[in-house]
Amino acid sequence: MRYMIFVKANKDTEAGKFPPEPELTRLFSAMAAYHEELTKAGVLLDASGLQPSSKGFKVKYSGDKRSVVDGPFAEAKELVAGYTLIQVKSHEEAVEWARRFPNPMGEGKDAEIEVRRLYELDDFEPNPGLDKFREIERQAKG
Image (cartoon, rainbow, N blue to C red; front, side, top):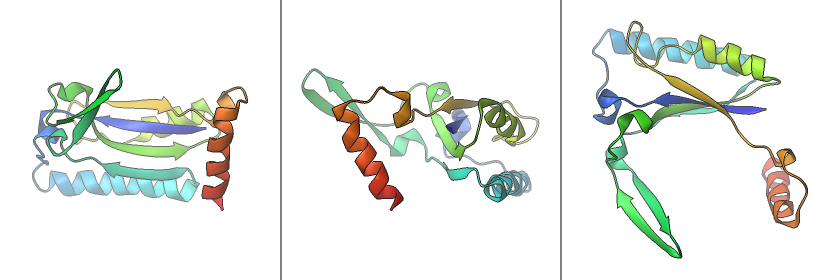
């Protein structure tokens, strides 16, 4: 089972503002230690911080039309500032890892992470549309 841990954005992450030293060093050290534990346990698939939405864009779909809208985006509380992708054996294991996630804004600060399970191809009934995805997955795994 794959789960994505989302670090929710706030006004500081959207401004590209980091905590002052030495708090920034403590935060990076705590995150590095946590991700090292995930790596040693063999469950870390990927992790990264995201730049502010002002450096991003959205693609909006309206019928047959697509339009590109440059950031920033209004609701910081609905945005993602970073993520960690893990692969675990159970929901309970995902909860355990999420509880150990360091406060992404620094200890003692308000913050929120959200954890969501990813769909796997086996979650769907077999159909010809998924066969191509299964082939792509086989090729990616080598």
